[in-house]
Length: 213
Image (tube, rainbow, N blue to C red):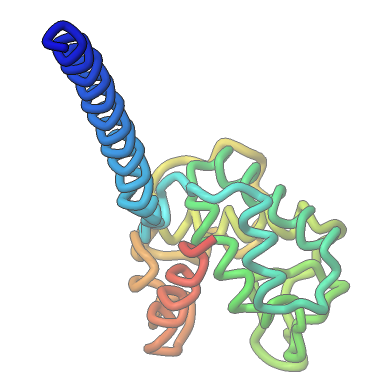
């Protein structure tokens, strides 16, 4: 009888040890899984990259991001054309050391997101109101989209820098910017590029929206 009880107690003890081990293992696994899930849930959101407000700076947005931003503001626009222009702006701005993000949103502001409606018409390929004064002087006209973009970048170059252009000068109004470099950032374009005292603030508003893309 004593031996039977002894064997039974021994088996019970082994069983309890195994149960305790199993329970401890389950608890450990649960804690590890909970820790992993908690870590995933607390990953900080990706920071929005800030766009430089200076004229002579490097843009950070890709042509695709610029085009997506544009279409969000004018869904009826021709996406193929917008995408072409976005690529031209990035290429031409990078070549001359100009901020493509600033140049692109300025085009958006000046053309009403390619709706035009003022002195300048779409067929002129004038994306920044160059030379647009009155009905007798509606503005400069360019043969292609890329030439229009190039002229815009060159004019910004005159306002934002005192360096020499790399490419062939096609902006006939470049020489009229005096002094050179008088608008190093977007706020400097108010009262110089445009008479509107809120011009810089309007560009700032568009850049803040672009930063979301």
